[in-house]
Length: 398
Ligand SMILES: Cc1cc2nc3c(=O)[nH]c(=O)nc-3n(C[C@H](O)[C@H](O)[C@H](O)COP(=O)(O)OP(=O)(O)OC[C@H]3O[C@@H](n4cnc5c(N)ncnc54)[C@H](O)[C@@H]3O)c2cc1C
Image (tube, rainbow, N blue to C red; front, side):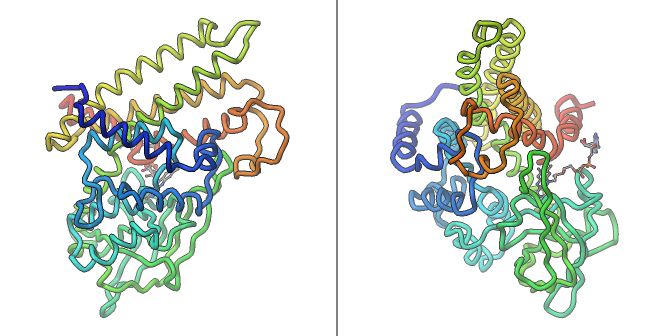
């Protein structure tokens, strides 16, 4: 195992840094730095800038417009992008659907959908979870019945992230009831403008309408929109989840959050001294930094194995649990450091309005909403309890 960077990798890091310095609009990075919410058009702006550079699809083959970066290059890009406060790239089309289409889609589907993901013409969302089918995903009930050259879809998806912006949804639907529940599931691409699709927002604890319920009422979907074979969707769904869980450690995000926390703790006074010198607070900051250093090493171990062609296995479950605990602890500490200043809830400020005169430190308005929002990290992408179950079986062999 070699954890040092090569001269080429250092040169790549310098190239990424130079690109971010020149092309990342300050307007966007300031919003990200202050924890403000980006509008759809701001997310599209960053998507288009990366696309123009050829860096939007790091792991796609060059033949389809991808950058063909290896795992180490992807890691370097993520670290640098987070440190520069670049917006996150919306992953559903680029990082989740695309790998499934590349592996299991028809040539026609690849040629049709992949360029539209790059251009931003199609915004995808993920229709896996249902009320009653989250951790136990195979119990999903949304039904797709064959009627000539169409499927007729009825049912409900939930927790659909950014579904309010999407024009397409990839869905797991039940096409068979024989055998094990996993055997009757298919992977279907649905145009959200089709009659019978309704999107209803769910407001989260931080006040943001980031997730949705999506209802299907006799929605007619062409059979051509089936990916792979009917009733084989579970295989494709699992393949997609391995891609959903890559980069889950969030090392880049945590590096940036730790830097902010240290700065705030050095500037905030508690009992006449910087908070960073308070023994209790200093001990928690030190612990989270040690955890982050240890996770960074584990992450590099996984990334270095992936660069040699080995698929990450149950280690990605370890990274998910540890990575999300660290990110949650960092938001918890920042909220504590902010104290009573974290109390005002300023939705207009978070949505981008900045003409208010706030007598608050600049990190204060987002401290509590970020803390509450980040509770989601241990639930989605397979809850941390489920990941612990995987570690128990696959690593500890219990
Ligand atoms: C903010 C947010 C965004 C999301 N975005 C999307 C999206 O875009 N698309 C999508 O399809 N889904 C999305 N999800 C759904 C997410 O994948 C599910 O919430 C998750 O899989 C958990 O399922 P559940 O909510 O039904 O909880 P349940 O599965 O009912 O679990 C409830 C609790 O029981 C625990 N539990 C369940 N089974 C076990 C077990 N076998 N062993 C130990 N503990 C167990 C869980 O860990 C959890 O604590 C999102 C969720 C959130 C919160």
